[in-house]
Image 1 (tube, rainbow, N blue to C red):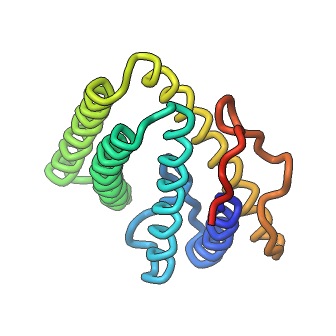
Image 2 (cartoon, rainbow, N blue to C red):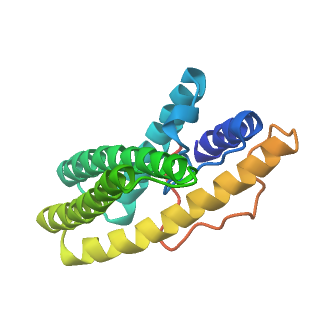
Length: 199
């Protein structure tokens, strides 16, 4: 399942790079500047993000040994946090785009630069507040051991996703249609355990 998702991600990456020269830039390597996405690519991007998130929750449930109720609570928390984080990231990219455009002027106006900088600063504080909110939510849901396993899982999972996307993107650029090459990304601790076959 994850191989199929990342193969699709690589194909979209190749199409996006061919049309705009951009690459994915968010924490999962699945984002670019919002205004550069055509509707079909945007739809595919969201489809990939939803599938990767489903995989993450599925594997988190096993790695943290969560019961059904706790798994649902964690999925709700992370879904809410991720949605807010993506909105802030989009706002940040928009502000940066505006800042770069303003600075192209031979004599940039301070009256134009100041509000953009203030928006970026506000965005920074909101991102920090969101992280605190996430940590507090995890404390309310998980035990100390589960939080420790969560931290390790997140690091390993994101590393695996980045590696798989890089491999899938490389395959797409070479004109292949297969999944990521085997051996490109070894699962991290607690991530390679056998799981029921996914339909």
